[in-house]
Image (cartoon, rainbow, N blue to C red; front, side, top):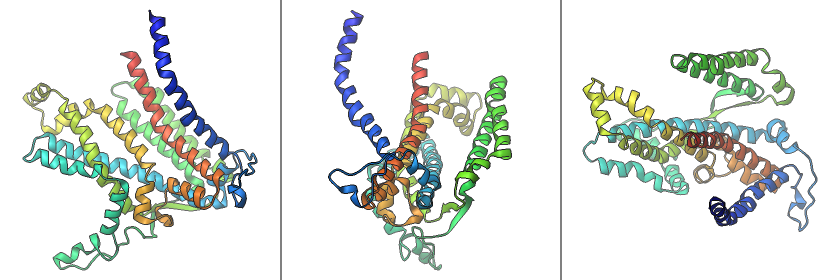
Length: 370
């Protein structure tokens, strides 16, 4: 009977599996193959274009070549977009969820207002915020209503950058950050699981930090170009628009999690003398940890797909607010460099996979345990 059910299940799922294999993973494989060729240039649109195998030459050009400077800055921008979206949307969304969880007057009205931006497309959001952040109007003229001078900040066209670093030091900086995360995480876990925290977090973190200090710059100086990159202030407007749109979504996730917590548990905590802050810190937030992880995964994935928002707010030719997705579009369909555009697509795919695959593995292991 079990074999019969398995055969029926296989027959039912096989069409979907075949279609996904062809139109998803097959096309991903074809894109990777194109990224290993030299397809591009004047004759790229010919009926039978010539595609010579060049290996990882396109990837080398993007990360260390002279012509890949714009992509490297776009990649740095993408990191800042992701970090800012995560910090802003999760922080504001959590704050709003805590406020609404305490059932204020007009809760339903405020919940609708906060969630409404989520219903808008990135094109609509970009158009609205482009008007609001125009140099001669919008946010800049707000001080004039109280008798002050208007602001002069160029929200979407500033060329000023802060937190600049040398591209050759990128690997060393990344190793330092990873070492710091491991050490801080280990110190956080040392009281609960001292042996595991020492062997898997603290010791590897110290070793990684020491290795980065001693020789983390040897390989980059041999391969990477020396050029400065940083956080362009023109990206602030785009970050504000993105956080505005997705804070309500994060609020809805946390609010659903808080609603699912038993009221008896909250009443018991209050009877034991816990304050509202203690309740959320020690009881509510640990119980909605899966929601936090899901929010991080979803928002990280969204931050890699900001093409339409950036296109609507600053256009395709503003290098200060660039993004790898926008660079991929311009490289592929404006410059007709299909192999290099495919390489950018594969890089974005791998970045997205670094967020999604660990989450899927963790979810699968939890199901196996259950």
